[in-house]
Length: 68
Image (cartoon, rainbow, N blue to C red; front, top):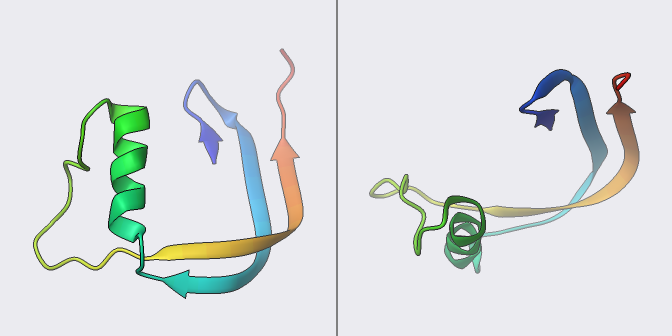
């Protein structure tokens, strides 16, 4: 992830994928759309697309802070 206000401030998570599923993936993107976009459903959904949820067990977290 990159801080949108400071491109030198970065967070990376490395790990092992423990689960990949499509169950609940559409509902999850809609919840994120409500939280971050303020809309009821994800507006960039395309016909026929398949959304997946990937669960990752973190093994390493890297952060590049900036002075400030």
